[in-house]
Image (cartoon, rainbow, N blue to C red; front, side, top):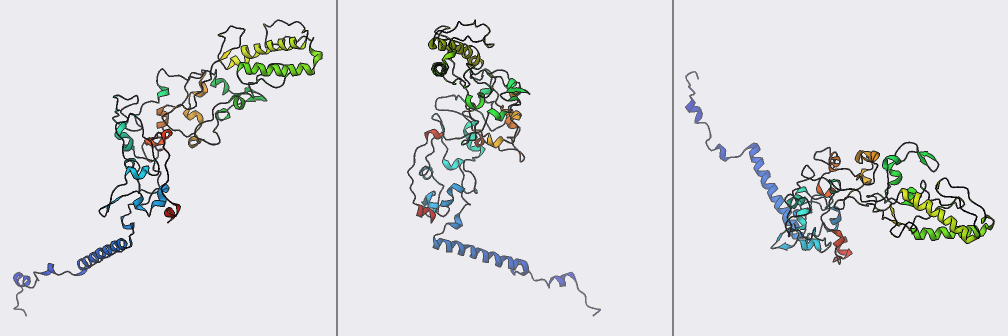
Amino acid sequence: MAGRIRTTKKLAQRINLDYFKTLHGIPRWRRILSGVFVIAGVAWLGWHALAGSPKPYNAGPLARPHALLAQNCAACHVSQAGFQRNATDQACLGCHDGPIHHADQTFTPSCSNCHVEHEGALRLANTSERACTQCHANLTTKHGSSQFASNIRGFDDSHPEFAVLRPGVSDPGTIKFNHRVHLKEDLRGPNGPVQLQCADCHRLPGADRSYKEPINYQKDCASCHALQFDRRISEPALHAAPGVVLDWIRGLLSAYIAAHPEEIPLVDEPDKRLPSRPPQPPARNAAEWVQQRMADAQLLLWRKACKECHSLSYPDGPAALPVVAKSAITKRWLPHAEFDHEAHQMVQCASCHAKANESRETSDVLIPGVQTCRQCHRAGKDAAEARCFECHVYHDWSKEKPVAGKYLIRLLAR
């Protein structure tokens, strides 16, 4: 064997030049399994096609309000030539006829452009930022310029300050109120010193807990600011129009003196609350007694008690009944936005309403500015939601149209 020579050429002659035409091992099994899976997939599609099931074409779960339609694709999608197309606006309006956004708008997006289905059990009102900024990043109207900001790209620096906080705007209320005085320590209360908290007056109502309940005299003021008009009558005066108050007081005084006729000739001691009031002579009869007490009551109410909070005017002369300016307390400061106080109840009031503790004037607007909101509502994983839908709605639901339902319960339940 020593004489045998194994050259490179001889070794190369032993190689099968068609080796790549024959599959072995992993490549062979990969091709076999690929074919098996394709055949299985086609068979699965064929099976559902024969059964009339739309499951293979399901793009994902529906939002919770539409869950009953999960097996009834034709309710929203119109079949065309064997294929399915996007849901039309007519399909949406058949169940809920959402009104337009604004009468002067130049562009109306389709329902599915903003409300994207098949993305899980989401709230369909949680629209993308693009759904709003496609118009509001360059806002135009049918009649030229808009009264609103025309270049808003999100809740960032492009979003303007809230309108009520811009220069030249003040609280239109006429009630004379000093927040600083009412929030100081050891404030005199009906039963001794108290320390008022914001929630003592600004409460969440029982039904709609988004906005604070309007301030009410009987609930929020009467315990400290009682309208006492006579030392003999424990019941305070009504909080009503001056004419109604006087009639009510006259009735109480008349009833009192009828029950105590012996007090008609008595002269009252000077009232410290009326230092300029000269002593009145003894009354000669019940009617004169009532008239004297009515005069004192009017001085106490019009010139002192009511005047502390209300703006009074006397267009018909100082002897006539005063005209009380309407309180004009603002119930909702952001008419174009939604706000939920209950969702923010974990935050201290002063964190947002920072100026309230030092406010002395009614004209002070004390709602937080856009920068305060951005501390939490901003971009980032550790931030609160900041998309447009968080504060704004698209449809003007005050113009919603009634819809006649088109489904039967048995059809939906099936």
